[in-house]
Length: 236
Image (cartoon, rainbow, N blue to C red; front, side, top):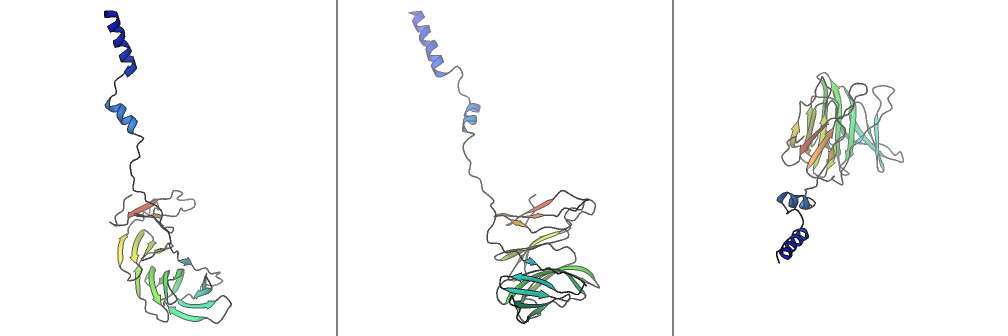
């Protein structure tokens, strides 16, 4: 009788497993459970102001860009004109009235009568980067922001805002009013050359990422600035 009882206990132990389940076992088994994660996906329907090109024989040749069925021209002083692609006569849009010389221009129509423009300008005070919105036929901008720094990067427009950059600076501006929503400056490091010039920002649902440009022979690594959209704070 004792032998049968002992045999019964032995069978019972092996049928239940030689090792009791512990808390750590439970955790391992449950580690495959998917936990909801807030995904920061790329934003869609963005607008990229176009860089105006120029084949310069002199410093006074016109900048030019084509947007859909229209061609736009800007001279070295900032006079903007447009013409259709059939070569019809140019019509005057607005005048930036640069003090000396415009070096670089980004341009994008917001509507038939309103235009966003970003440019680098050299005058007797130094080199400035300007960002503005102009209305057709008016030389006074609807709004304008000026920064005493060179190397403006290509902006990105996301419906109600425009994301801008210059030497050591990134920011977000309300496209309708010119109100600064957030800005981070003094990012440039003259020793490591970090954040000397930025490429166009990459926009995610909750963050904006600014990549600096490599410098051939001096800086191959591309550093980044990530800014939280709601707080305006740098997160990494």
